[in-house]
Amino acid sequence: MESASPTVLLDRIADLVVEKLTQSGALANLGSASLDEIERETIINLDQITREVISQLLGRQARLVEPPTQCPQCGGEVGSKPAQGRSLQSQRGRVHFKTEVVRCEACRLDFFPSVQNSGL
Image 1 (tube, one colour):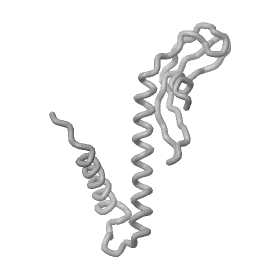
Image 2 (cartoon, rainbow, N blue to C red):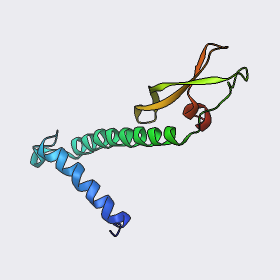
Image 3 (cartoon, rainbow, N blue to C red):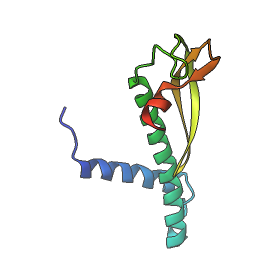
Image 4 (cartoon, helix red, strand yellow):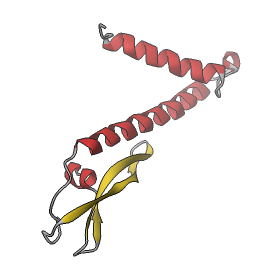
């Protein structure tokens, strides 16, 4: 399958946003909407999309990070815990993702390797 050009992809994304705004969204009555209303609703929806994209990318990044075998605090052995949800403040609002957690029993501290290793 041949991949679409960036312009074609942007057009598809724009079409989806326009459809969402005009069919079931705040711009259902587009004929009487002002430029300010159109701009405000577009920005609100694109910020939501941006937060979702960031969340998905952070989740993928978290799965790529190799968890440490030693505690970054004391150098002791660490054990794995189930992945936990994290929430960070981005320029476009709060984003949520899941990341692995390791625990040092000696320090009694939990560490989030994806957050520590990526500089988040």
